[in-house]
Length: 109
Image (cartoon, rainbow, N blue to C red):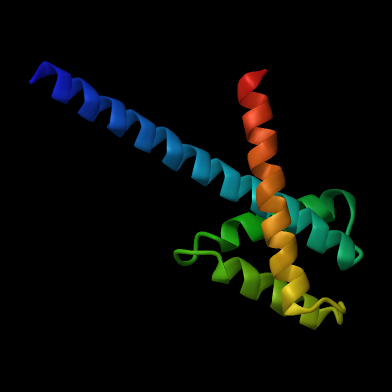
């Protein structure tokens, strides 16, 4: 019975760690995505950082990443930035990969 309880606790810890990694990765991805989008819209410096924070906050509106996509799409449309839906989604995927890589590298350091 002790072995079962130990295994259960181990799974619970792994689940919590995986959830934390997912949350951090998504937040990092959104920041990187926001900085990328800011650059496309001609923002730099503090304005780019502020915009990136807005993108991170946009992800809290609803579960999933569609709220982030809609924000970027609407902002690009408002500024006449020529990026397709596919390009935005590709950037989201690429930045998620980069975010996970960065967080894993920081954990090893």
